[in-house]
Length: 223
Image (tube, rainbow, N blue to C red):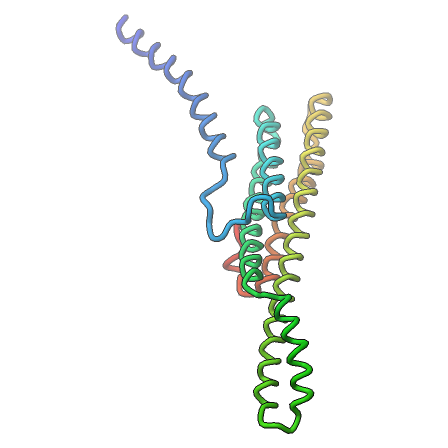
């Protein structure tokens, strides 16, 4: 009987030691970014900077809500926003890579030269070929312009999302302070904050779909 009691005590102590370690390990796994998928933005690029700022806010939110179970759902919502930020940053990186392959300055020079040549070659056997060359250059310049526009729209949405995320972090800190002093959870304020976070996630999905119509509903990141 004594031996059984000793065994149970040992098991209980082991559980007390193991559970906190498991909780810390799980928390670290949540904070660590997932495996890189597709092309990643260059270090120091706007997409990388905005993603890094979003990830920092997420770490701060997780730390803030670690001892506030009533608000842990907000940290989970913020995690979804950051996951969408990472996906959007990858799309920006793809656009940057595509733009790097289009030599816009030299194409603009070539376009000016071809425009003059086409005007001068009217009525000659070379006119049709020169016109096709000019059309090809125009098409490449048009593609570059559309890609720049898409990239700029994605970066603008990333910037707005991160700034709203930082605002949500500050509002959550204020909400926790008021809750602690009032000994009650302001459910309306918490729900409003959760709704805004979900709106940020949906906004990123929407702008990615506008930048790349091929994404469609099946490629909308995380539901």
